Image 1 (tube, rainbow over the protein chains, first blue to last red):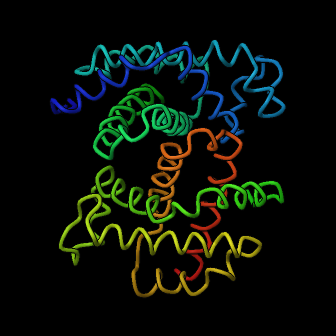
Image 2 (tube, rainbow over the protein chains, first blue to last red):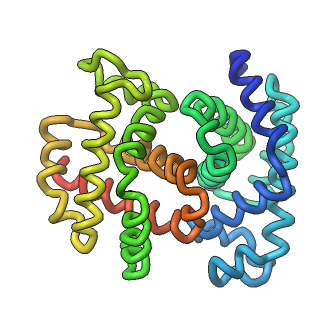
Length: 147
Length: 143
């Protein structure tokens, strides 16, 4: 059972309330596919991912980025049982999608960078710590059903 | 994952734009690291004050960034260029190399905060590769 301080709960709620899912999701996924190009292995059917410009203009990437962020929303709304909330999604990523769980951390790091750019100075060390703790719990929960 | 000529050019171009803010970048990255990754505080028990923007943190942030400046100038051969620093980290400071990744990440976050327009995905990948190269060069003399 993860212990959340009041500050952490408030910070996570605040960040996600101020976020445009349709902007941040695509930006984070796009960044991940560019900064860690091996992650493109999971998106063979997305069309043109040949270079940064193609990735940034790819509508499938944008759509999927938004989907991912809406998935994160479930954790935001169920912070006291992220593990349970993500049990099915974890099985999906393991058994159907065959995603190496190390990649979850890569996407999480890109999301942190995108959120940092959006929030600027407001993204203090304490805010970053709360956000990264949240993402670490998400990443761990998504890896839980792998076997 | 070695640096291509394009990567090196990207790193140098970004450094040209950000180097005058390097003290601020170093202070923020280091201060942030101590808060986000509290285990890193174990290396600084000799400091009176570990809070962000304290004198020791600001001062050390400057030191770190002068190392980064050196790395930029030696970007064509990081291993040779950072040999002395590697010896210092290996034999005197004995910082666990896992922490290089942690500080690199914090620097990248600060770049995103301070230079959101310049820190595009293409610049991000070049800088990430650069810091991986720096970390590797710093680890050279460890064993």
